[in-house]
Length: 394
Image (cartoon, rainbow, N blue to C red; front, side, top):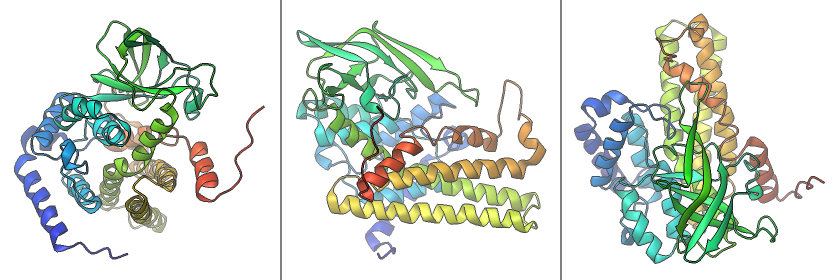
């Protein structure tokens, strides 16, 4: 593979860089990148920034032009995310709409659904959350028990979702629900779009180790949505959800991986500033962290090459998820080691954390969410290496 950028790509990079230099100022620049898609620090500022991105056409870069996107190439999307991370721009609040639901609707949705929902995502006027996990259905998504029954021209939904990121800010949710309880568990699922602002939906925050509460429980009690807001046919929910997860583990986390590169540079700078690089063991750990970012990058290129060839996110995307989640946990441990005793001291009252402390605590969950380590190993073993399926539990 030739990793040099073409003249056209370099011109696109300069366009991105110039726009960010002009618009990433004042309160937008002061906010910084934060803790990724789940971060809600400075929410109003982040939302205002997202709308500014939408007005300039930077949301939905890779979407087809007929659906309001720019039809940007994969390399241009990489360049945008690279420049965005370098600029330390605010964490994106439209991750679930732009990165997950949008591509899913383009691949599986009806034309009416695309016309109805894609413009709101592109302008950041409608925000989405992901209604997949349940108390008994995390990595085992097919164990979903939330029920939906067709009542005339509406679906009536009852059940519970959990770990629903930013549900308290979302206007809509895309949810996997059980519509045929008599079918095999992978076959009886459907993929519904539900408005969050209705009497039948209750959102309860879950306070995290970091002191924040960006995750939620969501309870559905006779919640309703229009009969035509089903993506695919009834019973297609597993197939559509796997498409969504493919986007989540494929291109959607490009920006996050570039954020990891920026974080690694911060760790190296911290070690230099505090005179810690004279220790050969510290130098070795810093080198390992830097090498890990390079491995992440080149494995990402491998996945993107497959994406360009096949048109859909490859199972190798699970290698990326497995790798970065464990790598980031180790980086968080290194951050605590470098801070020494100060890692146990709060930055301020009301449980205010230093950036490294917050990153360390958040990283503890990364081997669980978006598919646990165990599930990723199964996918790699069965779909990448062609090994026999793991025996089902009796």
